[in-house]
Image (cartoon, rainbow, N blue to C red):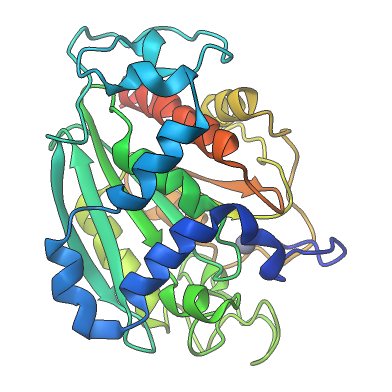
Length: 316
Ligand SMILES: [Zn+2]
């Protein structure tokens, strides 16, 4: 959530971009030109061109994942402790055949499309991953690139939203085109925070921003069982006693992130909280990455996402 003002780099943007440079460039090129690119975005396959070389070059352990009949154990890098196998023996789905489409769910203040891509098993457990809500915290994009191509466990209905805040991403700033912190703008427990020009500015009212409104309508429609949000750069996951507590613990265990409470900001109008409070049975939590994310780390995080997706499936 990037709320600790004392931590250098939190929200500064530039420190976060090095590991995800190639994927960021791809995303920006898709979004920066605005609505003119919408048609291209909807007809162009997901960003596999930029992803495939990274996977090939970046890992040995993931090479078995190209098979469509891989078991649960073979899709997780061998360095990860084994977890309970999925309760089904149905085959994993492959990115070459499980692509379900890509859609523009709305537009930003500056007219950029907010794009969500969809793959997996329609009607399965709905998992939503959001790469960027604070525009200058973009390391999560490399994880979404991984998730675009990785074989999926059976019965996972996966939505990938690179950027809920495409203006912030394009401009390398925290807020949207109105300088609003979108993670203080959601209507659950919204309060006026800060002033225009300040880092936590909550906007003029609950869901005042088009990006927030678009996300709310989208979440209401797809009803995600689990929503993950990437931030930087506090390097932690907050523990929880709620239903997603074990998923947080598992994710932290796989990736090495410590389970530590995020503090230092004003936690009202937060997107993850809105999802939990609004979508029935929804789980949603924030993953605070570090200042940078290497390619192997991105693969580890992608594996963690799919691992806890199977946990969410079991709960659902
Ligand atoms: Zn953040």
